[in-house]
Picture (cartoon, rainbow, N blue to C red):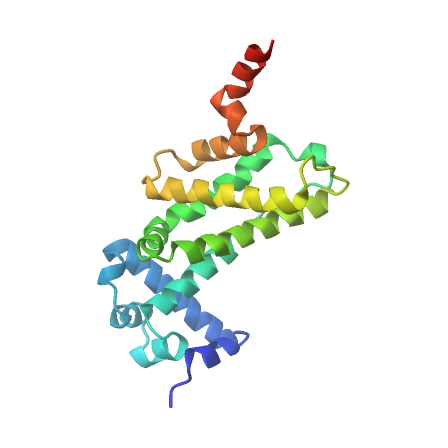
Length: 210
């Protein structure tokens, strides 16, 4: 009897299992890029990965289960550069480089992420991404140390993670109107300067108050 997907995932430390899942993930993402999610079948994935269908079903219930695993893997695979221990050494350019790397990763699999959003998986993906970004922000705050937030951390960290997630969701849904580097500059500018400054409203407000 074939192992249930849950049981297969418990064997995630087995190198053979890891290799098989990677092969299935890579086959699935390539097929989605070529044909779109609707046209991809488990038989297609098995053929591309050079395994039989039973092997696929030992790891995943269906292609949507494989899709969720693939999305989780792609998020986990995003590479983050070490954060300087000196806050002054973490420049605007460093932040742009970080965001550009994320956007380039998303762009490589844009069709897959769009398919998830179109299938109604957006809320789940958004929540997962927000928690992922929150973890990154908190880690960076710990590394930099001795920070004095002007707004309570419990409020600002979730807000920043939602902003970040909304920005990349907009970028993908609008067919990536700006290249990753340019979009990264916009994202960092928005997060560092704030929306009012980006709209020029801070200057207008200052003039109005004088």
